[in-house]
Image (cartoon, rainbow over all chains, first blue to last red; front, side, top):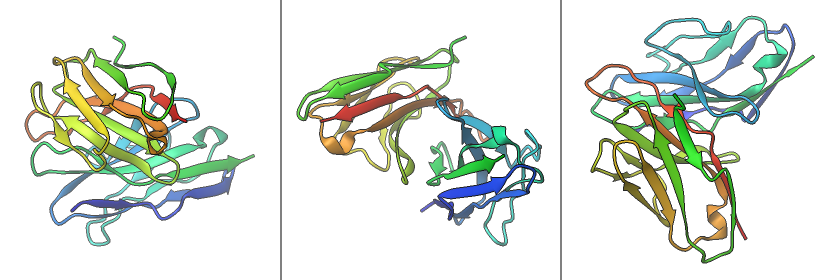
Length: 110
Length: 115
């Protein structure tokens, strides 16, 4: 079975401080990992995916298969980064829905 | 291009009442999904439809039914609402042809309260 764990429900950081949102997964195959973000009163939207190896809004995430992790990082937090962040996994085996973690609320303090 | 739309935005039901949540997408996606979002629980899959004419149960299907009316529309029905179904419901769609990467697009959500 696939599982995504986000150990922190809430993460508070000061503006300008580094941010790391943790995500660990369990899946025996080769997964596809995503980070979704939900700003206040807005719908969920894709932030980034591991396949693209891109940086979006200053955020990056590297898939570490050895540690089964996909942590989201940003060197300098901004107030507008305050939101709910969800890590999600999709198995490569066939047409399967995303499995989401429980989410981490990031609060950036001015 | 509206993306994924949901109606209604808000709804209050009494225990035992029934209702249908509507979802439509205009991106010609094959797959559609219904999730519920609860504090501390994240998003949990209720049902999904990999393609027109097929539906499958997700993690929390009890108390719900779905209909994939056509490629655009995917409705979620609560036959006899219970307070435990108080939640925010999100519909999503995606294109999942082949083995390529894909993105799920979400609707704005329906906030349902069952008293």
